[in-house]
Image 1 (cartoon, rainbow, N blue to C red):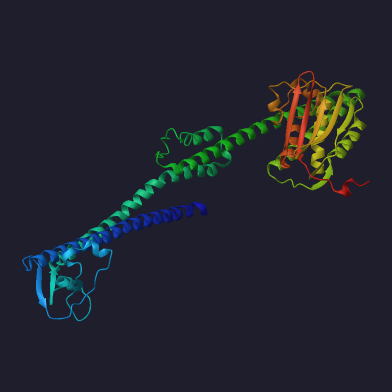
Image 2: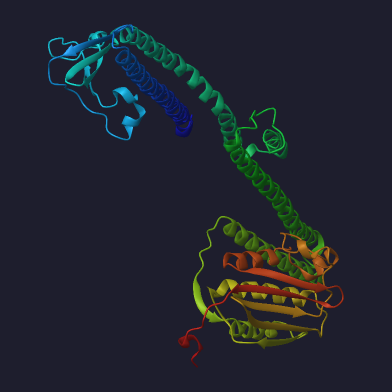
Amino acid sequence: MSKQEKKAPEVRYSIVRKLSSRLFSRLFGIFLSLDILICLLTACALLAYSEQAVSTAWEAGTSSVSGVTVEASSEEPAGFAVMAPFSLLLPDNTRSGLRSVELGDLDGHFHFRQLDSFTYSVSLTQGTSAYRISVALGTFFHFFRYAFAALLVCELLMLLSQLPKDRKIVRRTLDPISELAEAAKSLNRAGNQFDPAKMEALAGKLEGINAARLDTRIPVDETQEELKPLAMSINDMLDRINASYRAQVRFVSDASHELRTPISVIQGYASLLDRWGKNDEKTLQESITAIKGEAANMKELVEQLLFLARGDNNTIALQREEFSLSELAGEVIRETQLIDSAHRFEVRGMEVGVNADRSLVKQALRILVDNAIKYSDAGGTILISTEREADFARLSVTDDGIGIAPEAVPQIFDRFYRADESRARATGGAGLGLSIAQWIATRHGGHMEVLSRVGIGTKVMLALPVAPISQEKTAP
C-alpha cells in the first residue's frame, strides 16, 4: 500500500471531524441565541407586568393586586429614574417614580436562590407623603429557574445526540467523492495493462454524471452541485487518457508497419545475395544499392521517432537566439539547390526576426521544402516568403504541385498520415515530417496553416512570435 493510500483515511477523517465540528458549533450557536432571546423576552414581559401591576395598585391605593405591596415610606426615595424616550413607554401615573431591584442577601454573594426573593419596587410621592410599591417576582423566578435548567439539559442532550448523526450525514455526503477518487486510483493500479475495454468500463462509471441525470454507479444527488465539477474533470481526464492511449497504439502500429517494409526489403536482398548474387556483379550492386537506401530510410525514420518521443517527454531544450527568417530561408534554398536542380526556387518577403531555436526552425523549413519538392513535378517553382502579420512572423512555402484534397487537409499533421499513399514509396518518408514541424511551431508558441487546391498547389505557413533583430545580428 502506497503512502498516499495510507493517508487517505486520515484526510477523510479530518474532513469529517471538521465538518461535524462546524455543524455542532452552528447548532450550539442557534441554541445560545435562542436562550438569550428567551431571557430578553422574559425580562421585557416581567418589566411590563411589574409596571402594569404598580400602576394598578397606585390607582387603587391598596395592595389588592396579588403579589403587590403598597406601603408608606418615611425614608428618602431611592432608585433610578427612567430617562426619555424610554419613560414614554411607562404608565403615566408612575412615570416619575424611582425604580429599584432587590435581591435576598446570602453572605453578600450572588446565588440563584436569591431570585426567589426578587422584588421590583417603585418609589412615588403624593403631596408630602412617600410611598413604596413593591412587586414580588420570586415565585416566577423559582419556577423559571427550573424550567430554564430543564431547557438547557434538553439542548445539551440534543447536541450530544446530534454529533453521531452529523458524522453519519457528513460521511454519507462524502461517499460520492470517495467513489470518484477510487475510480481515479484505478488508473494508476491498471498500469500498462490498460486496454480499450478497461478504459471504456472505467469511463462508464462517470459518463452519466451531468446536469441532466445521475449515474447509478456513483450516486451524486442533484443538490450536490460542488461534486459535478469534480466528476466532469475526471471525465475529461479519462477522455484525454483514452485519446492518448489510442493515439499511442496507432503510433506503435504505424511505426511497426513503416519499419517492416524496409526490413523486408533488406531481408529479401540479403536472401538474393546468399543464393546467387555472390558471383553476379549486377545483382550484387543492385542489392547493395537497395540495402543502403532502405537502411537510410530506416535511419531517418528512427531519428524522427526519437525526435517525437523526446518532444512528447519535453526533453528537448530550446536554444533560443535572435535571427532573421529571410536569412534562414536563403540559407536553406542555397543548400537545397546543391542537391536538387530540377526545381526553381525563389525567396521573397520582408526582413522579419524571431527569437527561437534556429536549428529547429531550420529543420521545420527543410521539412516544408522537402514536401514541396516531393509533390511537385520537375520544373515547378517553389517559393519561400517571409512577412509580418500582427505579432507573428510568417514563413511560407508555396509550390505548384499536385495539391491536397480538402478532406485530407485536417489530417496532414497526424503522425504517419500521407495524403497520397500511391506515391509513398516513390517519394519516401513516413508521414512524420509535418508532425515534427507542427511540434516545433507549437513549442515556440506559434502555429501552422495550410492552403491547398488539387491540381493547383499548396501553401504551408509557419507562424512564430515576432522579435526585433538586434543591430549586431544585421550588421554586415
